Length: 273
Image 1 (cartoon, rainbow, N blue to C red):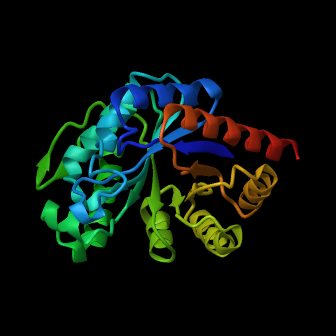
Image 2 (cartoon, rainbow, N blue to C red):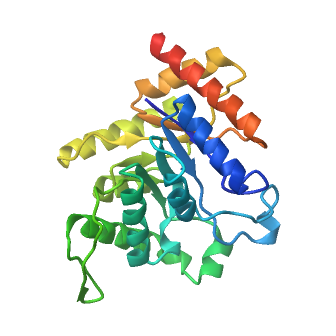
């Protein structure tokens, strides 16, 4: 199982120096992936804890591609309807090229009404807009000369397509993952609640002649109780989870490093057991 950690690209801890130091600590210790969140226009009433300060995840991942060498880089999750499909496709290809293929995209339809309003996007169309963008991104990574708005164009660089992991709850996220994704990124961390939808997703992916899905939930392990965390990780693996985004909060680089060390200790113990 891939062990990932949530890198806070928001709030006071998201200074340039902290972002770099945390990313390099995670890589040096041997974690598999760094995951960043996505908010573009937090309303004041929702800004507690972050102050409304969010670094754009794609810009931050491009930056971290130059500050790291091995660790995976991903979004958990990118809100697809906020962004123009063509411009975003170019961002994804550029980050994938610059990082030598380390990018994964958790992608979702979004939920915050205030952000849709600020972005000038009809929230009722978020599912349709997400599907259209994902289809277009597939076309871009599959063709040197894709087409949009009745115009063919050259899409280069065209590196290997990053994995598209569909965020959200079943059944809609499962349907979208089968049709347009490589896996699922739920926010549910209970193994028993994940068992049935993962089994359904796996069966449907294989029936569609697609590889077995990646399943990478955004959750938090109870790291202060290592035996409990080991049991949960083992149970998640047993139901088909292939990776984890641990989202334990931290307020300093030292706290981040402590969390990273605890995560690796849990993973080593779970593998040994």
